[in-house]
Length: 411
Image (cartoon, rainbow, N blue to C red; front, side, top):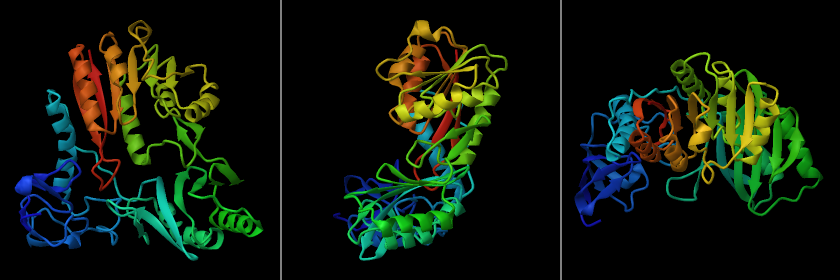
């Protein structure tokens, strides 16, 4: 960096401070209006720059790990700036796609300590494990003592989990640990980079750790070592099997908010609706409250299997295996439905939206975790005669630059 003194002009897409100086530079943990002196380049932590002029929107980060842990990036923002940044991510994507932002609502924010799943990294240094999240832009683990986004039950697991690693895992082992707080207990999936010898001492450690923490299940490299009770969550009043490695909305409160919005926007006594990219049935099993028939489409084999187990018990829910990227529902197939719900992966649903745009379905609900691909697909729908009536930003990924949304289109 040719000039160590930087004036921050705006926020970048990931919440970094941005300056047009030096042909454009991003400074993490800096805010618009601030002037700073760069002490180390590239800037990775707050200690890498000296703050000369401070923004009124700067607040003290509440977590002791902020700045080192790569999990949270925005704890230094005031609440008004934070909400405005998240809303603007959606608005900017829509503007770039040539669409109106009039229907974008204020951000629905959630309390801290509600994340029910996470993936920790671990590395053994002798018998002393390092356990936590990666630091920003590196593979160095920030050892966690606490976490303000995780459910307290998962936070309380940190110390006993480290004790288990120190007792059961080889000194040179590295890997990842996925944890899920299900409604029947905690599910843990341990993945190693080089495998673990399963001797008597290892299995004793597994037993003691599982019993002391009341785990629902523990697995190693895809092999289930111990199951006390099957991990489940409830969708539409129906228990559905889940695992620590399966896709699931990370925040129960965000999930409930989206379901409430969906059901509020749908008319009652529908004849037939479709849930596209249905996963394990979050929406499909709730849609049976308002529709006589629900068709759920999914391609992931594990999710499909879990949904089939419960969906088959309802005469109103039919489950179909289908790759909607390579084989989207066509116009003639869509003609049977009065409403469509779709919740695609981050890449969006361009192929399916091209078919939806040609249809006459009165109402489409689109759930997305990536504003850019959502805006692209929204433009396709609008070019086909749909109107984007409302977008509700849901702050599911607290203190990160990510934003979830649920939107409604009418024709």
